[in-house]
Image (cartoon, rainbow, N blue to C red):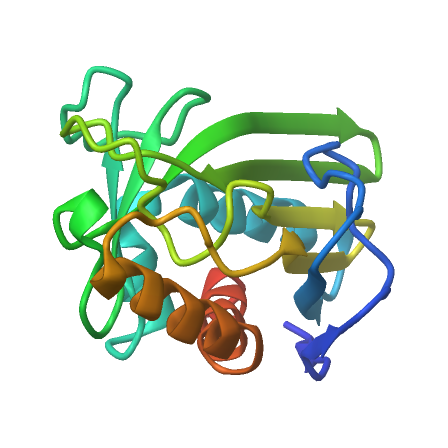
Length: 217
């Protein structure tokens, strides 16, 4: 099996792998692109490994294991607020436990809602994608967005096969710190963490996740 690892890229305005259509237009704030690519020996190997990457992407509860011990922990929660162990679906939530204190609005967790889950298969191109957006916690009555990013921000996660090449990409769009928090503690935390995430948390977290999605045992 031929394996060629390409260096990861985190930059503004790089080519998007948006075949699944989950990445929204950029209007405001910061763009963060994190991409890892591997090239397989032939189509059969690429098609097989795409399925592995796809299953890893859709199994959100295992992202912590995929990304490594220093990463955030993700728990999938359904539209009724119940923790579930299944592939992600549109309308679900991610309950995210990142290192450090979490927002009081989220009972110590950051929350995003799953806006889209999409998949395409067009011959030599296969892609699956997930788009999430910061949201209120579904488990309490707080009116504050329970995340360090603003509700305009999105994160899109994709795994794409183009011939023998497979790409894992995480694309943050319209990224800004959350400024809607009511409590002083959450305001300080959201600005500090949100600003730092652009250059620290997102780089480390998403790079490790992208690498993990394409890791060959």
